[in-house]
Image (cartoon, rainbow, N blue to C red):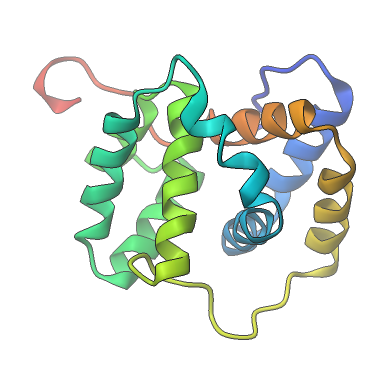
Length: 163
């Protein structure tokens, strides 16, 4: 999947580099970004006027009810675009709401409501390099990068009652 919305070549390159990582490494990189930049991302995700926090919270609450192995599998499924009900629900969200949902997952990981990263986990060298590059971007470019990364995830919503 090489979808990107932003015309910025650097952001496109970073999104594609992120998407080329192993699925679990993609999840780990997201966690490390949250840990290092979460405080600056916080106001942006919930503060955007197009966000429906209740929708992101509702999807988060469904994930929270799953056991840790199911939570991890769902996150993997979202990245891979696997077609299931939660993935379709996610796919129907706007980009900023998707970003808020991932932010809520990271908060849940921090409190262990959501399956946490294994203790002592180390990012691979390519992920560490990408994280360093992301940290150098302006805040606006970081937000565009995160939106472009989460946007194509999930499955396409289906017509009718299937979502």
